[in-house]
Image (cartoon, rainbow, N blue to C red; front, side, top):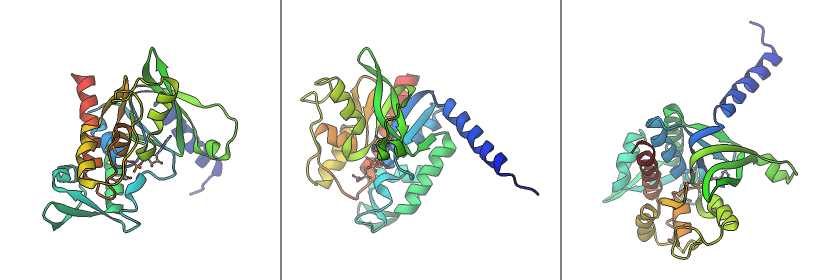
Length: 259
Ligand code: 48F
């Protein structure tokens, strides 16, 4: 059978264009494809909430691929096992309350489940700003990561979304933009980004869940971004808090949308 390069090119352009156009208006836009974002995307999509995700890098998975210091195994505590089970990620017990999973299997399986549940992922796209109406976040300003990296002077495009989730990890990039444009209005003690504290795994894992919430009208934080915004410590390569945070943010938004 003959293969024609122009048909191959045309197929890619048509299908991608269709997907992008279909994503211009969504219920939820997730920024960052690390573990918390992927889990949030899975649960939201599973509940038929139209959810899209932007990831700056070529690959989703964030800090989960490398386990701890590139030993590609992750540790998960007991409370988070139901999430691994729901997502079909295999695990084994290491000690009481300590379980481990293959980091590669975890990223691939969670991402696959999320996409098959309906999550649309755009990789190689960076979020550089938000869209606001009367002090409510209602969308994102996006550009190709390549434009960003090459520092080209190219204007971005915009997508509209009822809710945005910042799962950009330690850098809390979306919240940072909001603080810059509307100073002092965050739902934190000081109204601003409190800043991440040094390693304290046990405290951090608990706080990640408490800190997963709406930080500004229309904008939620989850995962490591939640701790960084609320001044919680970092936790290193234990991932239960990330998984549970992704689930929690999805549940909060599902409640808001479906009542
Ligand atoms: O850092 P990351 O894995 O976030 P997370 O879900 O998980 C944190 C853990 O990996 C680990 C930890 C231990 O549990 O603390 O660090 O909170 O993933 C964040 C993703 O967001 C992308 C970035 O490339 C990464 O894949 N990202 C960051 N800023 C942007 C972005 C942006 N402006 N636009 C698009 N993607």
